[in-house]
Image 1 (cartoon, rainbow, N blue to C red):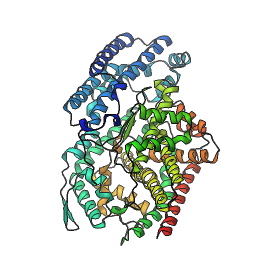
Image 2: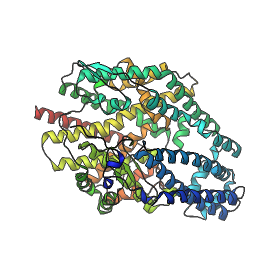
Image 3: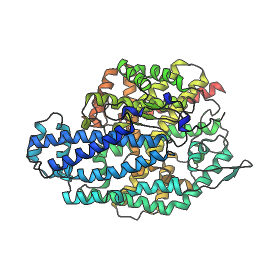
Image 4: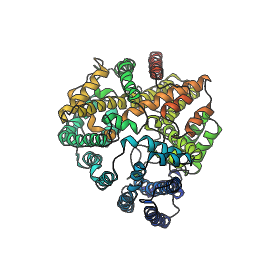
Length: 600
């Protein structure tokens, strides 16, 4: 039965997030904006051209931390209101005004980091050694000194910030505003098409004729925009290359990895081993889909099929609380208390409503809990999404409670480990609750397709393609739509081999994904999941305790990803965790195959 999408004013308030944890009233928000402006003005007057002693440097960092926290709160208030209802003019105006406001603030603050990096290293070392709170922040400043740029260049780049960052906004405009899709004919009927309809429906449709026609229709439209979008993407990667040059990095990849505090060895190992080794069990999984659905062949348009599309247990928002608490209780009483708080304090925005952002995310303002956006569809697979976002919430809940603001945000390499860990835990919990073969197959196939396929195939193939693009940039080769299409095709065909038919139009898949405007983000999904898989297995076997995993979450970014992983006896400097993860996936696929034989 199709769910009616309600207006925001019609949904149950108790099932939405509580933004009063940020500001009680709109007047409080406006007051915070005014006070923040004063703080920034006073900060500029007090510290500009005056960072000349360790005490002054640490005083400035204390004030800068306070300002940064305040910016986080007002930014989220504007952003979360807009995310909850983009049809509300008041939300749109508030968000637009804040964007202008923040641009002005940034220009006034840009001097600070530039001046810090221009100071004598002895002065920075003295400041670092005289403050426990600011030690890590200053260590990172000192580490980046070989890559500093002059204050004048920094200020100039600040003036051009909106222009330099326009590629992502251009992409979103193309994708969500300009692309108008044609209806398509399949199975004797005319069907409506849009970006959202394709990604949330048609690509998963169980009717092969409709699904394959939808893919061809969708990708044909992408082709009409590929030249402009390729030029826009080329502008973005060339900007990144310019930044790498300005900051004295050897190449773009080393520049982008520097922000993640990992080496090129880790990055390349992650991509190369998964491309080679995970392809074997995933091809077996593709053949299983072909057999289950009685397909003449398995094509690129068939890879998102569910193993059992007619079997989807239902679950209400009210019922989700018990699943969340019971399922994640393995992580101990501290974690269970956090999950209970997420419900009792309304951290989660559940219902679908008009104007609400699609998908799901978690934002965690410092020491104010989290804000989790979902679009609940009353199907069991939403439990995995909920567990995932609660993983992010738990990470920053514990980091925020144990670290100062500067020390909470972990590297992108680690950021998906707590969230994907929760998905694995939830799957294990569901399996323990119901031994019906069809239900077990549903759970296993969901964790394969939702967690491992999504993170270690879809996003990893993006990462492999992205690496090839940056290699082209380094060799000063032109980046055109045809070049990008062929790079993506080569990646897809290398992974799937002869098992899956990859048509030429599939090369345009790069157009669908905004991750390429977010640095080396795509590969980090598989990185986090690799850590999560190994850590989960060690918790299950008793090799490490739950308390050890919580200690990792509490550490925030006080350790590098390699050091965080070592806390749970995972050595990221070797290929062992990757091979363990691939073996884990392979075993689950074999279980699904066996259950399918049992059910036949």
